[in-house]
Image (cartoon, rainbow, N blue to C red; front, side, top):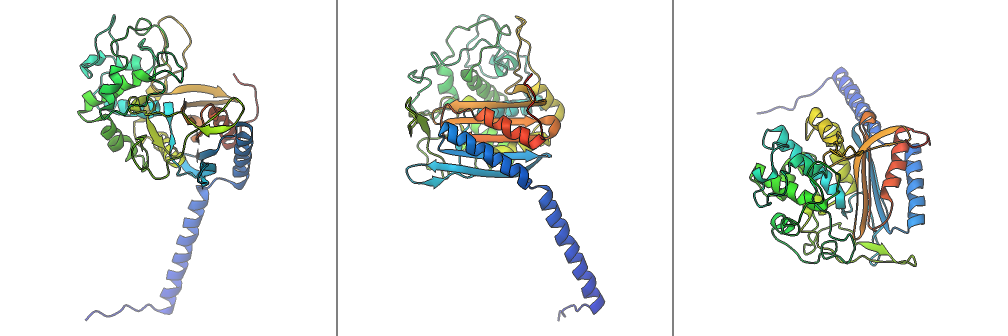
Length: 381
């Protein structure tokens, strides 16, 4: 027979003190990972001003301080017609922030010795034809390969406003541009290209022997605890996905033009929340996805051979504002404007996701970053 263990009065007192110490310690640790009320008030004021000036229906914001996710919140509406509020869990189109996710996956494979960044891309993606000069994965990731962007850049362009769904996104995406001539000699000039990131996705598939989407999920999203990040499948029922809006010339808010982004997932086809993207920032800052040296290489700007200035690394842009050196990416497409910003030296980060195109999410992100690190309004450099 098992007897219940009884504690003496002194033992119970000691256990009580231990429990109290543990409770206080846990509360103190929780407090350390909370945004201060003063900073939260300043951020909320900046968001309120941004929404009033842009008429964006919904915004989600998340912030990282000291390498930890500290606060996230939603403002306005994720669905205007149904009066559904936005939150830090609302899923927005990331648009070109997708490139930073894809680049991180490619650098994992480089770190493992599975990708040679300076080998011709055909080593991993034989479906991409040889061009006038050899093209490397490094050049494609840094937009130096000479691969074009959208044909016209107009919303009426069949690429920009694609409405067809593709079940094989990498192969279908390559078919849009693989046979086109290069805009310049590889390595010579910076030509921003979302299409080029479909080629990076093909390289990832060839090097990893896994489907691009599956590799991203298993090697980036799961390790970073990005539980809700997924492709923007227009036919799927996706909880918490926002509706997408645009503004007319008269300033009225209306539903955005239709888009099926299944042909450009690596460069602009992921959905995510502010909370998930903050967790991505935490994973990057704490070397959970790639090593510090790999991260620094990814963030180092490339040098076009024509001598022009370039602030873009491998899937990430570099900036300097109000004394703050930062890296990140902005995004914009039908029904979304987004910004992801990290100040590595400050171990701080900001995510701003909105459900309306044409809004300056990057400026709001920079304002919030200045609040986080206590930077003054010094002139930009």
